[in-house]
Length: 379
Image (cartoon, rainbow, N blue to C red; front, side):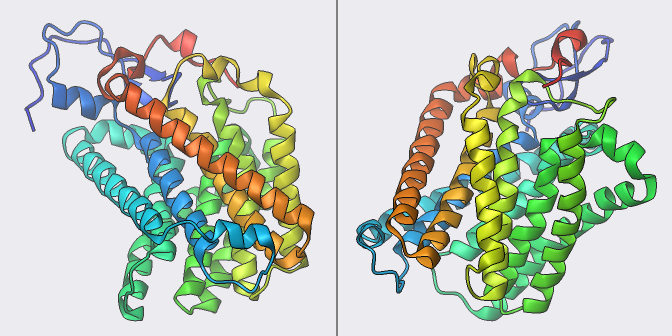
């Protein structure tokens, strides 16, 4: 890692990047160009973990589709022809990507700790610190390799302890400071903290821990009810999102979808409660899909925020698989097929766009902090 280049005094200004809404330091009078490694660290932020989350959820979807089932519908059997080798390759790619980005963030913690601290204190950035642990839990649930129960349980604790720690930090602030804080800080990314608990609850069932699953599920859902009402009200004085971050509105879909999956795992079947949560997520999906003009401005230039589309749609597709198995109807299976195809196409399209723009994401100026007045436009 190259040392930080010598710089003349700079004017530091806290700004919300229109492409990643993270607090950054705007350096506008540097005498030397930063090294490539330093620019990569400067441009990198927690929002990049969206990529890992999307790929991990795709692995969960593919494993759900290829695993044996008592569902004898023709569409369900048709999807089971997906090759196991393709699923293993997808899971491996998701694991490598998670390891790569986690290592990069660890270097950022080491060399640019002040920026990591600012991200931790930011009302949007802090919620993306849940994402690498969520991705790890999803990969743990979908692993194609046989592992011992003890090894899985140890890894579950390793991934869940940071989530519980962040829960105490965030939910503790909501509880002690009340509506005054929550009404200002609540935004769609706040749902990531809820989903982390739900993902952990579903993973606990795989480990054979129903009581721990119930604990995480109840904690997440209690705060989801408060958060959902707060976000619905759009209280005056709240911190909105930049226009470029409007894709994160799709997280409204992911939370009830993940809740339906978690409760289905805890209960042992996709019962009425799970179907109700799935119906809510489907309604929210239709509400957002019927308003494409809301996302036009955010789609004018590619950013890592586009990856916010993939995970919610994929989790909705996973929930539709369990719903189709429980409903046993042609319409339910057609819905499952449609959502699965949309999920896969969106993910592959995002991979292509990212591959074409990887240089701009890590080294381009479009990922650096800009003018405060132009980047604080709310969603």
